[in-house]
Each structure stands twice: as C-alpha cells, then as structure tokens.
Length: 169
Image 1 (tube, one colour):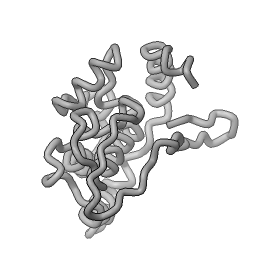
Image 2: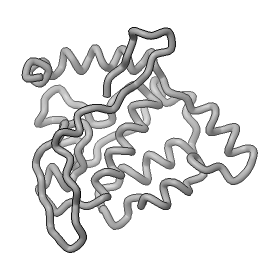
Image 3: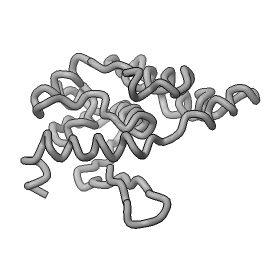
Image 4: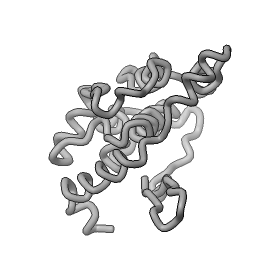
C-alpha cells in the first residue's frame, strides 16, 4: 500500500500484484511469496491456497486503512510471519478508539486462521458494516474512516523496520 501525498486529498494505492496467480478449481496451488505483512497463515505454513488467502489480505488492508497500523508487523520478517501464523493481533485503543464494533467484527471474521471459518466473498459483501441493513448501521459505517495520519506515521515506521525490503525495490 502506498500513500500518494502529491495531491490535495491523499489517495491510498494498492500495488505489487506481480506475484498474483489465477487459481483453477481442482488444481492444488501453494506459494511462499508475498509481502510478509499481508500474507495469510496458509502461505506462511505452505498449505494449499484458495480465495480465502485473498479474503485474509482484505482483512489486513481494512485493519491498516482504519487504524494506520499493521496488525502483524514485527521487528523482523520472522516476527511478522510468526505473528501471522499465530494470528496474533489486537485492536489497540490508540488506533481503534473511534472505530465501530461493526468494523472490528468485519476484520475479526476475515483474520481467522481456519480458512473454512473465514468470511467468504459473498458473506463479506453482505456484512452489515459493508452493506448496512438499517440507518443506525449506515451511520456507524460512516463514522469508521480511513486514518491518514496514523497511516503516514506507520508507513514511516515500516520504512525503518524493514529497510532491506525497500532497498530491493
């Protein structure tokens, strides 16, 4: 994820799909590549992959957009991968103090280690935080906004924590 600061209203861009693969039904696919912060536990553990890995990444991206922080980022690549494998994350009050329980529920249901229990695409699209079913839920959704200031601070931290990854780009 990149933050485009060169415009009046900053934009966040999702990038680096160079390692993306089309997964075919009935064909087992395993992969050990990806940006460590965003990979699912099944990638870390070299298990067969499916759309569930993408749903995990949506959970990570949503977490980052709402808090500006990364749910699994450690002080090293190994610590980050260990945090992912253990699904070791929390909703720190500093970053999520104004985030709704509906938004946290959406993230929690995506960041589940067991792929069979992780939100499926249609369930995610119908989650009340994404598709409110009443005016109260619609209001709650509008109150959960992208946290640009925390995103900027955490982006600076990521550049310091993993300089070897940035140097390879």
